[in-house]
Image 1 (cartoon, rainbow over the protein chains, first blue to last red):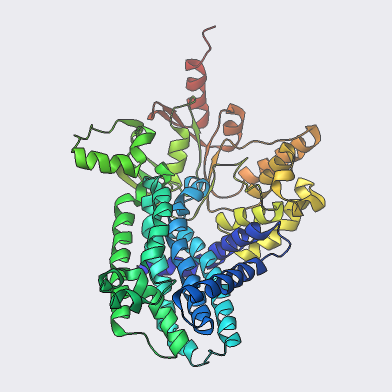
Image 2: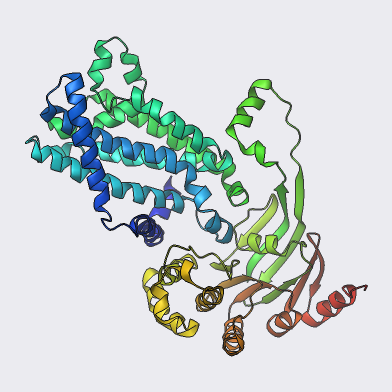
Length: 259
Length: 248
């Protein structure tokens, strides 16, 4: 862990530059450029938010901000799963040619996704303002959630970087699992719905549900989320970080051979 | 003081079939409790021990498949030995993909900047170097075009100019040579000569006996991952050339 922190500081210029190029080349040939992220986000939350608010019988003004924050967080989570698997696969050229710390490439993926998260959260705050739900104090209450979310990305995509390199079909497996995860995770609906229907276990056993809650609840209510959400996510992050450390120790030296 | 120390270093490549690298197979094997066949390995380097002193210029020679590139990747710190120990004192700048390694969708400018940063330069140092690289490679404004639009000659020239612009502490290079049309080749030869004459520790592999004769003061001759000879340039090259007389 300590060594990764020093890598993060020492090589900041390098992976920041790589991430910037990744983003640039993703939007290079599009006229709208980065505003695509905002448009996509707004389009989804306004249209889907309206439709589902009618289905659920909830007020659109309540539901649309709720859905926006949830889906922004979900995009970040799914990137950690899907892009995490490809981290070392995509960097194979560099891994074979240069004696660099492998974590550089984990931070590279992370910076790209953090950028999306930043833009997404700003859009979400915009939506909150439109529906007159924004309280400036809520910014303070999401700070712990943001920290947890970032360390989640680091530990999960870090572990998957090794696993996805070893098992090349893992990325496909995870991609096809994502839609199921999306359904069981309360992104589209409040977690209370499941708890009231007696299948609260799905919520409590699912760290992703808590992860969304530590971002969404503070933004909507200007207060910290329930304590157990922080606890569940922290335990999960510690578990994944240990897994990452284990994989690095066991498989690290094979990475240039496998890449 | 040694820059690189190898102690009984061996490198094994695992010869798995590609299918074994899937989660499906891993799970299947787990459930069927298939007895794992012992993984096949190929010993690319066998028990090598040698030191490279600071400032020494070592040439690695040998036929194709003798383990030159594996050895260079090992002394660069990219491959960790399967057994044995390696110590590297200093910063290695490996030029292993001398002619490749550009990202096609990025501009020449961005690619050069990435390459220089990977070779250990700071962002500022890299930016300062770029104008002279552009000038040498004669790319002009094309440097701001994506590399995928370049001709082979253009990207070779750019790669050459960028790679030879650094001032390394320990240089590890695989098959460096000049490139381009007659006029550029002359220019490249001069630049390569001054680059290889830099006052740094150097390990370079080559098939060109002229190159190693001119720039190395010690030669290591590899065959099948083992050292056949290690000594002064002239002696080893003489032996090597004697053994490789084509039998046609």
